[in-house]
Image 1 (cartoon, one colour):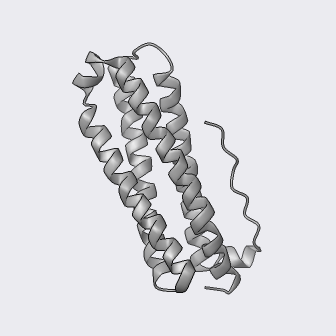
Image 2 (image 1 turned 45 degrees about the vertical axis):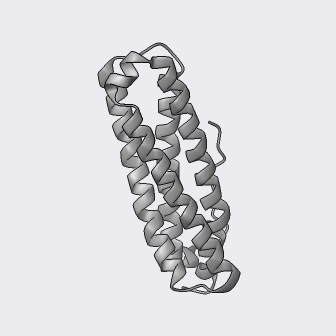
Length: 158
């Protein structure tokens, strides 16, 4: 999964604002999740690995996803209390997509226990690839919708 690192184009003083801090934290959470997705890509691109390696990779991606989701919830709350009109609607739509992503991810984890993975490695690889495509799309959505709003508030010193 190739990705371009998000470039902070705002002044240092804007990074010291609450919105700037949230932006930096969200970007960091996105980057960590991308690293873990790339690691799982590598694992699912080959033959079945040792169970310990797969279990550890699944745990790390779950932890990175939980961190991103928790931080996103803080960002949604922060923005919802400071925006209105089309900007607020954009936040609500992104939040709704985040909730759908969470449901999709939970279904994936429930469907693919370690026993199910051992029974059908290729099926798991396909399903894992599919969920990571959705996760990547959601990261892109957050970058396109939330980052500019946080930057705008940071520019105003909020």
